[in-house]
Length: 326
Image (cartoon, rainbow, N blue to C red; front, side, top):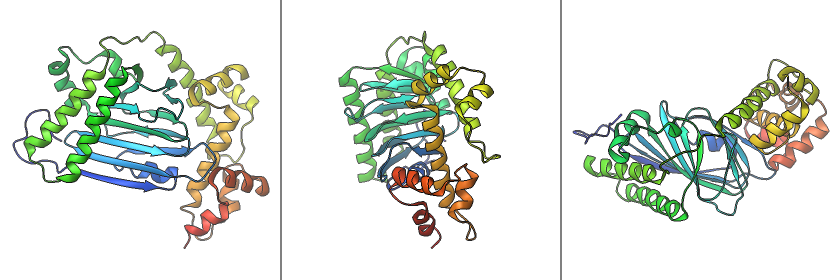
């Protein structure tokens, strides 16, 4: 992987691609090289788009979807994420338990990504190798890497800064798409311009006073989600059972879920399990049926299950199974 120094020989060929998707799982898989898991959280037929651009030590992404999603996973190894909403009328997202509105940056280490996005949400972002960022940061900022950047945070920026970042990002996509055989010098200059733009967008100081509280709420939600999605049992946990296993009150659990995921624990549990069923239907063995897979995720009443599945994904589970067994 290239460093911040000028490249002496071509070590990485830039590439870009645009992928149109019809499923949250496809949206995650389209981002090759990253370990991502997406869940569709709102009802309706899914339509999404991913635009990717790879430069030495740096990945650019533009992503959109018409349905609400929860995005989790890890990006490319030891790296940092910078992202910005581009849909100012879509409502707020939630990034690691912190609300994200217009003119707010999402930043921090790219492992442990947890982002809940509303319907019709668009974002743009960049993932920068940690070694590269740490080597160029003092040259661009005159100081060591900020502590605030080493934790997943949301930071407010001026509207004109966000508009400038969008222009820089779009110009980079256009340039590589128009000329895929850029010289090493041109590639490095383009990459450095992008890093400088995002670094200069950050405020000089970062308030970390509320981060500890946010992290504690997210830990409760993460532990609850682990219990909810245990595949060793076909029993769906009740609210009381969840509270007993976590050692928290119902009020606290509900508050943490609303703060971190924007929905109740039981609503999330059912939606997440429906997403798991869909993922397994799309890779089912020839001798597996809808009942076999649905029952593994705690769905025993097939009539109600089919209605809930169709409401969320706009097709019956049997149709999903049939399409992917052809």
